[in-house]
Every structure is written in C-alpha cells, then in structure tokens.
Length: 261
Image (cartoon, rainbow, N blue to C red; front, side):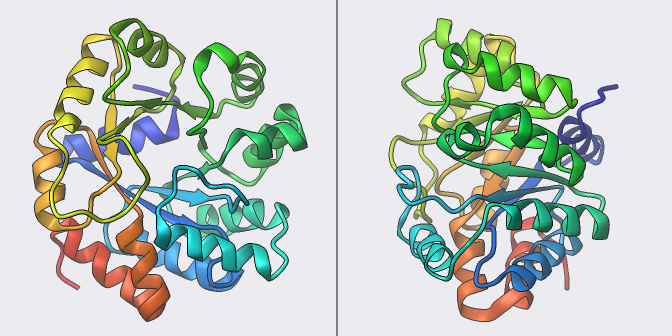
C-alpha cells in the first residue's frame, strides 16, 4: 500500500488489468468553470489522474495547441489563485488524483512552502515540474514532503542511468517518461524511445512510470499500456475542449480508454 494518492490511482488501474489514464487540461481554459466541467467529464469517462496545467508566459515544453490555449488564458487576466480553486472543485466532485503541472518559476515566485500548502489545502495530490531536476529541487522536495504531496520528475530518452536513478529516487507518485525529445502535440506514431525510457527508469528503481508526449489515439494507449503504468494525454483533449467543450472532452476520453458513452 502507499499513502500517495497518485500512486494509489495508478495501482488501482493496474489491479483492473489496465494502464492508468492521465488527462491534461490547462487551468482556466477557456474559462474557469468550463475547465472544471471538462476535468469532471474526463473522470466520468475513465481518467484516473488529472493534470491541471498552470498557464505560463514561456511554455518551452508545450506544443502549439496547448500554447494557444494558455496564451488565451493569460490574456484574459489569469490569476494563480484560480489553479487552487480549480483543483479544489475537481477533487470535491471526483475521486481522481489531481496534480498540477507547472514550470518551477511559478512555484519559486510564490515560495515552495506556500505553494505546497495551498495545493494541499485544495486537495491536490502533488505536482509535476517539467523544468526542475532533482539536483536543484531540495527546497521543493522539503515543501511537498511537509504536506504529503507527490512530486513528479521527468525522465527523457537522453537521461543517463545515473540520472534515472536520481529521478527515480526523488519522484513520488510516478516518474513521467517523456517519449520523445521536443514539445507536446499529437503525433501519428509513438516514439520507439518510449519503451526504452520506461525500461531504463524501472531498472533504475522507479516503481511506476507513465508515458506522455504524442499520445492521441486508442492504438497509442494500447501500445504504451503494454509496458507503462500509465498513459498521459494532453493535446488531443485540449483540442477537443477548444472545438467542442466539456462534452467533446468526455467523448475523446471514452474513446481513448475504450469505454462506451
């Protein structure tokens, strides 16, 4: 057993013989209430873990669909407090583990201890910090540990065995396996590097590895689910929200998870 809410959600999916489905949506897109409704639809249609992305002015890892969405959110006067309000609303309405995904500058500006406190008070499970490496995360690790939150670090195809061991040791909840070098976005095929990243992270001691970047079809989910503990989908969901609202997000989630609506 684990006291990590994210790990518990992944383990629950594994007990059902399937990979966990992790869905990403930007906080406040296209507005706060709609983003909450979309996240709830995701859970209703099979998502085990929700990632709420924090809009940022220089999203170096995000592809064009997510960049456009977050640009719109920032343009309307987004406040960081909205993230915690959204997390609280989704955790109160669902049983999913709710993580925030944020560039570390946002945490650093607020202060790691304050950010972790507010996230925990909102019912959040933890945070994914794509631009933070464990070697520079001492203050953040202390802050999340103080509040029992998960901390998710990224493992890439270029990560050395030594780096993977450090990532595995520092992560709590799961290790985020990046399936390719580059920005997020839907792709025709899953990078062959994905399985290599998962294998390397597991050999380095990671208990759970979930794969993201480029996942957009049911075939991708099945392929990755054969070797990873969870499958992370973002761009396909954000595009559905943009084009068809929360109901479209639910339809795509049901399709990706193999559920009937």
